[in-house]
Length: 271
Ligand code: AMP
Image (tube, rainbow, N blue to C red; front, side, top):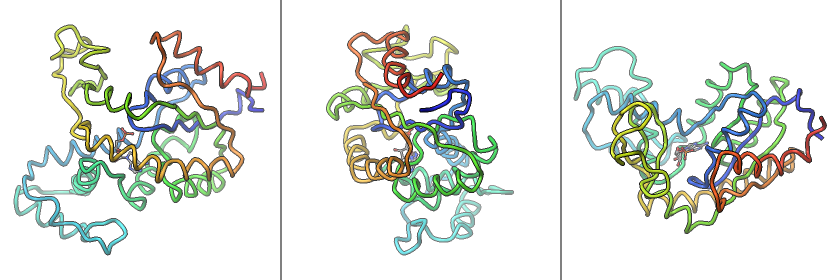
C-alpha cells in the first residue's frame, strides 16, 4: 500500500498522444505534485535552437558511432557561430539541435542526452514531489532512474499507464494544436478554440507540433512498443506498483477524468 503523505514521485507513461496530460493534471492536483516533462524540456531547447536562426542541414552533424549520435559539440557550435554570428554559450542551442533532429524524425532522443538532461532538472526539485511525464522511456532510462532514486533516498511510488488504441491516437494527434505563446493544447475537432486559429486564453497563435504528422506518429507508436514497454517492465520488476487508466473516455469532462484515474489509484492508497 502507498501512504498518501509519503509519495515522492509518480511516473506517468503511455503512447505519445494517449491523453496523458489530463491524467497528469489530476495527479498533480490530487497529490500536490509538480509535473516534470522531458518532452517539454526538449521543446524549450528546440525553441532556443530555432531562435538561433541557424538554417543549415542538421544531418551533417550526425555521427552514428558516437553514443549521442552526433559529432562533438565544439564542431556543431563552430558551424552555428560561423553561420549566424552567435556569441556566448551555445550549449542550449546545440542541445536543441540534437533534440530537433530526433524528435522531427519521430525518434527518441538518445539515452545519454536524455538521462543527463533529466538529472539536471530532477536535481533542481530535490528529486521529489514530481509527476514524471515521459521519463523513463527506455530500459536504460528506467535503470538510471531506479539507481538515481536509490542514491538520493527518494521513492518511485506508482506507475500510471494511460492506455489508448493506436488508430484513435493517430486521429487525435494529427488534429492537435498548441498555443505558440502559453502552450495550451487544443484539437481542431474535439477541443477547438473559438476561431480555431488563436488561443482562447492568451490570444497566441495556434500551431501544429512539427512531430504531429502521421508517419512520425506511427514511428513514435513503434518506439513505444519497442522501448517504453520494456522500460515499464523493469520498473515493475523493481517493485513499483502500476495501474492502467483509460485514455479514451466516452464523455470527456474533468470530473470523469478524475474519477477514472482515482478509481484505479485509490485501492492502492493506505489513507
Ligand atoms: P512528448 O511531448 O512526451 O510526446 O515528447 C516529445 C518527443 O520528445 C518524443 O517523441 C521524443 O522524441 C522526445 N522525448 C521526450 N521524452 C523522451 C525520453 N524520455 N527519451 C527519449 N526521447 C524523449
